[in-house]
Image 1: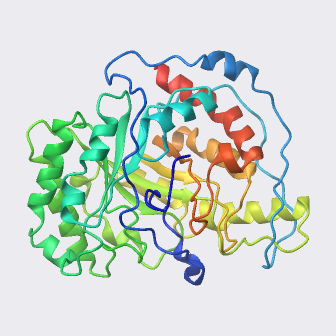
Image 2 (image 1 turned 120 degrees about the vertical axis):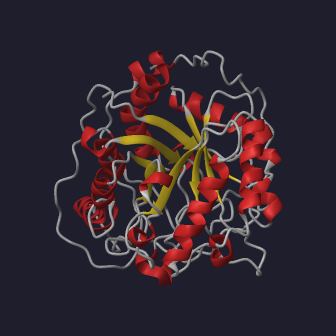
Length: 400
């Protein structure tokens, strides 16, 4: 891990179902360049990591629930999700990871997993229009690598108090997004998947607003401006933060003609189920983790079940641009939770959900304020379950 306070990655969305627990907002200049060591050629054969041998050696290990402490009510014990590890199911889903702006970190992740990734998620600095339109350090890092870029596009610069969603709706900022599109095309990222204004239903983002019509018009302007650039073959992921939030994302849907995917960021977070009570034992953990899935992550008004149906109704594939376990300073994350990993596997591999791609957020914040997600560094039980279930899927997708 190379993160320092100056090059921390942007924090994933903090669920607003319990806003008083929201962690501090990320530094707007959060992601800084980290040079690659040995980037591979984009159109060359994929690197072979001996993944088949590694996957074949992965054994089934019993689930041990992490010990954490908190203070909240809890339900009685209920059965956990199936712990079986079926053969890899080919649903056409692609798999990726966030590992900062670093091809070397992605390579290290592949070595750890024993399988290749196809997609990389990344974020640029976003303090100014120049940061947004010309993120050259990021483009240099991913140029001539074999990965498809899933890129979070800020709608507004975080350090400029003169900007507004309404001005964006009027077309005032179109030129910045045309420049971004030109830079992406010029650097071999003409097929990038773009998460324009991701997690817009979280009030902490600069582009969050209760002016739904202006937001939709601004989004449409961005998509149309970027599509107008010669050589562009982008796909656009309309990306919500899962669960209940201040703004109802449904009201911000900009139209089927400017959306290629419906994306959901789906972390193991639940103000209704966590923190774990003091002296929580095995059945207590099982009950809390199941409740989190049932009422926040999958169930509830705006859980994965809802968004899967929403995507179907609009004829769009579903995506999971960010997902992961989470140990949060406020306690409302599930910590080391292999049950969540199992349930996400079951959801992703269910053909009825039509998941086009899923990317794990493999990162721990060094300042402590953003919490922890890294399977390799922080959550051994979830890591074992993830390798058992997902390594074959990653490798199968990379070889198809």
